[in-house]
Image 1 (cartoon, rainbow, N blue to C red):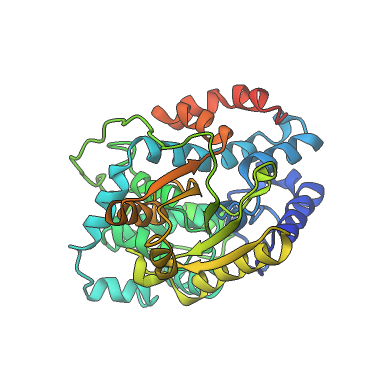
Image 2 (image 1 turned 90 degrees about the vertical axis):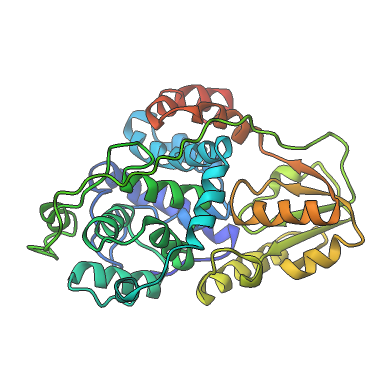
Length: 379
């Protein structure tokens, strides 16, 4: 299983999935057939996470070939990512609390056994090694993994979310953090997700039988309440001379009408991150940026976090493609405060429209997908 790093090749992957494999998705998507057989899922998430391709163009291309009723599960899964982002935008303290929690959790012997794949649970150990070797896990397997981590191994969900972020090519602050909270029973309070031996056996195509798990466990209790905060993004219609693009917002075609003297692609190194990424994930992100530098005709340059810090010592006003709540936004927020910057954020109108429906649960959001599709002529 290999992942590409250019937009053109990511689009090729998307088109191949639409032409050859999407017809299996509705019925086969929950099965994990192993790393050599992923035709039942798209494996597009690393590209969508970095927005080499967007959720919206993916949806449009799919619906150009199939009616919604035939691909509804796939479209809904695509929009889960949009929903999670919107949910976190409305409750940004969930992210900052997660980062603060990590500072106080000790890495004991059980934790070290888990991250090294040295537990007594064969499937879990295999998934740890698969994650480290391929930087990807099947979505259903991620739920099973998280459930075993939290309820059988009795480790903190925060350290599990951190472990995923460290190794996943598609690690996304919203999807990853909130999915772990959901499994724990915090996101939907009182409703945790418990992995069952029959479930693992069935959806790994009988690979793992009679897995010994803790099959009854109460949801994790977190008494913190998160009220909705209005999304406030500083922006205006007057463009600055320079544009900053972080590595999780790499699709720049919607900027074609806007001219900048210089564009900078930014990748934070681990010295500027709260959650440290593996070398392979950092390298993957670097390759994505390099592909964008090579594929586009505009004048652009690569900056790391320290380069950006130095840039802001002399340039106080610039545009930024809004990076959403997470590592990049937190870094930028600290920089704005320290160097008294005047930033103009550029957002996608599709994102802002969709995020309005993230104020409640996903079922409410899902009911509004037809409105979203028609509003942006995606269908």
